[in-house]
Length: 59
Length: 535
Ligand SMILES: Cc1cc2nc3c(=O)[nH]c(=O)nc-3n(C[C@H](O)[C@H](O)[C@H](O)COP(=O)(O)OP(=O)(O)OC[C@H]3O[C@@H](n4cnc5c(N)ncnc54)[C@H](O)[C@@H]3O)c2cc1C
Image (tube, rainbow over the protein chains, first blue to last red):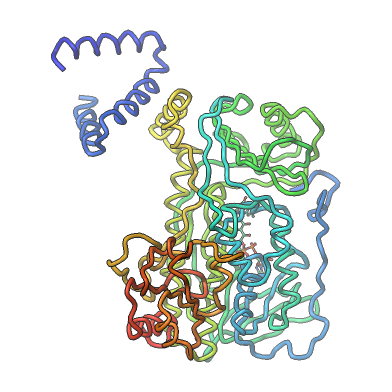
């Protein structure tokens, strides 16, 4: 995936979040995480991505 | 609890018997090899399992009848194997409702249908629904016709003290308070176990957040025996509901209270009626119904650190409390009773060293911890304890509406039998096998002629073998020998070769197995597992 692709995902996700309303953001993102995790198919990799996402939160 | 105007044991469909205290007062103080405190399902099963091994016991219960209410209703295959081996199975098969299927719904839409593993190789179905008072009644019928068991109703144990080579019990009944000594005591006196308290022991573990009301109602409702779980239904947003069919047109409705919902108010008759009516509307039942019985519970995972205290063994709820939606409370306790009975019998009969009894606690406590792990998983899904668990649960359910894989997270996986792994009397596995059940596992079923492999097993240890010369070597032993054919379902199930042997314990767990068995090693494993020598 190049920068353009990532940017497209970024845009699409932002717009999608706005269509479901702020109270539904967590559940949409959690569903997405489960779906993508299944596509990745590698538990260890998913775990380390979760840990990376956790880093710096609240900084 | 029962509706206003009905006594505790006034059921819509069950006549509670009344048992008198012992009228024949002679010999009440005579020493017994085993005293069993509590004639609930676990105490009665222990007495029957001991009798099956030829050991007499005295069984005490403080009450004058069975436990009130239908309580435990889901009985697993493993427990039916136990009922069969203690000679009590016939009425269970006539009355109970077998089932294999579960359906889960999220906001009214089905997101999962699961099927518990079953096959024609198994004599019994994975699960049966039957009210606990029938379970107690059928066990009682077997107990009452067993001359090795002396039952004393209305007889409360008020003290248990150690004495030389046993324990001294103080018993209070309507006529007198007296003492009796026993070489061994089985404490089957339930979740609030007075014996546990008298011994200064306590359960340890966790309490979960969710509180549930269980209500039994009688109605004509057309739905098969399928476990239904309703997540986040319209009638109870944010809550979970379980629905089970029982014999006699009785249905169990099990619903979760909301956070902050007042417990005392929630279990008032009016509120229970209103909550049940809302559930019935949700599932489309418009006909009449009657309220039979209700109760409230919260999910706990609590156990004793050690199931043995000197000459006393704790079995059933006295040793452990598990969340009931795992349907393991009763099933787990029955396996305790079956486990300790044959070991104690061998020790009492002088056929085993006392250290055989040391295997009881690790085996059965291990099984309980396994139940805890599963139950905690279910509890977290049914009643998410924190916002994180809540979000993931909601996301999984929501995703399951379109993606079945996510629905699998709602599968309660209730039927995984436990393998005794860390047991001093279970042998290491033989690496020559490729497949088949491992030592410590419970023997799976296999068809044999018109019956089942299980029908061939003895009351003691059984050697399953495919090798006639091995069978001959043990013919003079007290082992039951079952010579199997290589062209049998059993051979396939056991992943056997022509010289394979399996050693089966009286509780149907596998003690050891050899792909190419030699007499010497079989004999040694038998001595260790049966306790003729210390491990
Ligand atoms: C309201 C309720 C609902 C339940 N629902 C479910 C369910 O849906 N599914 C499930 O799997 N499990 C359920 N359970 C748990 C299940 O009922 C127990 O696991 C099962 O009854 C345990 O059997 P037990 O023989 O160990 O104890 P109990 O059935 O409690 O029996 C103990 C016996 O000991 C006697 N006793 C106590 N103290 C003394 C004394 N000092 N002297 C003499 N006798 C004494 C009592 O009178 C009683 O008969 C429920 C329990 C309750 C209370």
